[in-house]
Length: 64
Image (tube, rainbow, N blue to C red):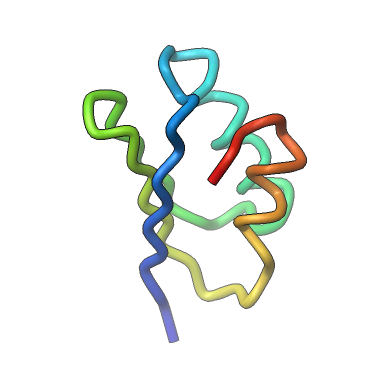
């Protein structure tokens, strides 16, 4: 079953941030779909994994 997770990332402000977050998510689930909106500072993740994506994003240096 696929789930959609939505994270508010207040300190995401550039393309490099999006890449770092996407890479952190893909380390946990290579098949996850990641969509980031810099204007609203939201990241949406579609995944079938039960991994802790919030922790992965924090470990990448971002607050969530």
